[in-house]
Image 1 (spheres, rainbow, N blue to C red):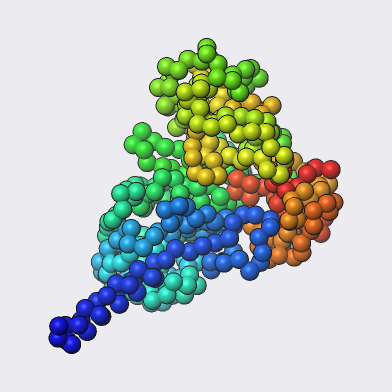
Image 2 (spheres, rainbow, N blue to C red):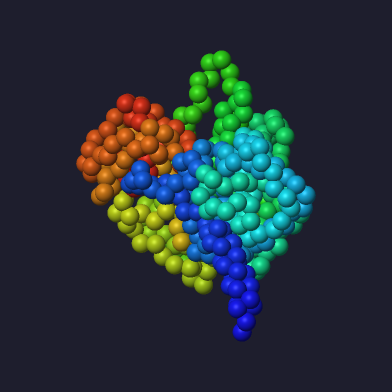
Length: 416
């Protein structure tokens, strides 16, 4: 082999490996009160971050910038012409880049700007978010998935009032979809609109299987206050049935032929909540709780070890019994009972006034609602006074009398 040929092969190999390395996914910190202040961070503190088994990572920065990263070489981006480059927070860099293509590394949605951005391995020679340059997603000519787990789908984001009326223009863009990873992150965000207070986030799936996320806001009035404290109860009793006798048993009278009747019910608008099991419950493939449909049992656990589920939908049996469609912490989906005798909200929804720290490792208090900027650590057994509850995505935070924030997770703190 000639030296000239060898050098050419070496150069091409190095270029390819560099491109792959640059698109390595970010790892942000999780939403847990036991996290430390030196956790791996993105440009700004991430309110929530999850890394999936197939390499995706997703989360929220500063409550309104939603991001999702992609594994190396799974999706190729292509765009033409000269475009403006932006920073991770959406600010103009006063730089431009000519059309090119590369391995998709990240999609960022700036909800307050109503704009989405992408970064790929060829846009800037760094994997550090603070130094990256981004282009608007509207400048992308095409996304080409190299992995069968991705398809290109349009995503719509709406901003409405409590009457369902649009209060700001929506945004729609195409993105490489991988189940509901991006939707999960969007549900954790709390965008802002002048004159309104954020109320809730919900996902709907149309007949074309394309997702839409709707943010609902309450119009501010002179005497309405901040609107941040939840007035709901500590349980989801308003959404449950008082007659749910087959929650824990494999009832032989259950109608196993009613599966098809729930197909539309599971696609209704739903605000995600987090619930945990207070007694023994089963996870089932359908709304019919039969032995053949049961995926597994969850045994009754001490409070600090109770299994937690994310409610992603609602459905009813033919008899009208309400079920929760849930996702487990391992990512498995199925149905559980919605009976409040067996499940309850994982997070406090009203002010408990006083709490005792029950987490074995204690909890941290933070200056910011997204549980960053650690102030101090509280050991197990510490009693703390609470002055308010604040909604944050699908979770809540407790505001202590000193103004700091702690988790409202009932597996970590207990009302005294």
